[in-house]
Image (tube, rainbow, N blue to C red; front, side, top):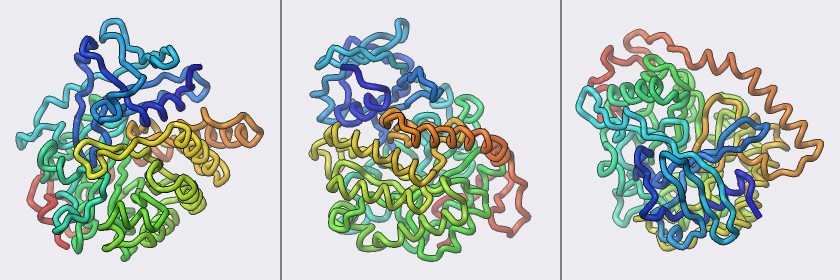
Length: 429
């Protein structure tokens, strides 16, 4: 029996895909190992052909151990088109493989390869904007056990990204790839906090004109979020990871020791009040802690007016948890159905922002495919359509260039955006 587009997405995350040697990927986006390592698969687009009028983007695991035993195999070529063959059921799924953009092979004016500054993950541009998460610098390391940031930053991507490098890369991605959203993420920076992100946010809003999201370690001083909002940040997200406190401490020792779980939830609640419903997300990982804890985590985040970003656990190559098993499809389908229902019950306007398809997670607006067609379903989908229409002028306005600040104001950036004041290592703590 064939799977619907979201079910296929979930199963590909859980089981990966094999790429036979005879299958050419000429012109496809390269497999890149950057940031935490979750985007080190093959970018694939699943058409839906549905009234949702969207495509589903998936960064399919192809290099992990579990993918070698996958029943899914890629077939086809750039000329004839691609399909995925499920050899266990003999089902065939037409897919697209996005081409690598020309700007990937260009350099910034400082001579930095643009694809070592930022990468496309779906339709948005992802940039890791600070030095490596300091949890990797402890002895023994306190890094999250699923993460490979310490292996990738400085190796497969530039560790020290000047504001000018980021701006030039953003402009190229906007002009050539049509991005509307730039996602800045970073690890824990100790006493330096999140101030290092301010010059990047200000410069993108002033010189690029795009929606900007930031995924940063939480702060106990909430006035720091006020500063980011003042600079024009459009979205804030927080990596809660696990609701179960024992699993949180076991898998995320640095977060448990230095931050604690409560500050993540308090930050989400505060930022929802500042940015509004649907403009904040709490990220959790499904497939490690007991499923009932993950479901409670989804409910907790949605009840605050944020949307849960649920990442299916991926035993990435080089991570401490590389040998852990990948989750079961049946469990993950249950989780993603629960995700949709939690957003519906809390009237979270998922999918309202333009052209944001994230390939490394199951997007909440992918999950309507999993829900039965009840009156509540149709009411929520009608609400989502109205929210998209109502939000268009708002998002259009937020993508305009913001006026530059006067010297000394929060967010003021040097004219060329390339001085040491804009470099992560120079931002004062």
